[in-house]
Length: 89
Image (cartoon, rainbow, N blue to C red):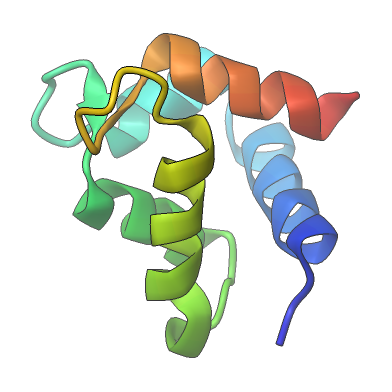
């Protein structure tokens, strides 16, 4: 199983290589335009980052658990940015 650092690195590579900014990545994966990433939208991001299907669901839950500060089970732009800032540091 991939480690947390490996997974975060894959997400960073995806965003760096395919988007002009983290905000563009967020907007791309926010398929319904509600300014939040749902579990299915996060799974799509992880799939594009080449996180294996076996662990994608677990990682999605852990990302929400770790970064969802308002408890709505969604990731807002500010929560996403906090995760990206942590990855980049």
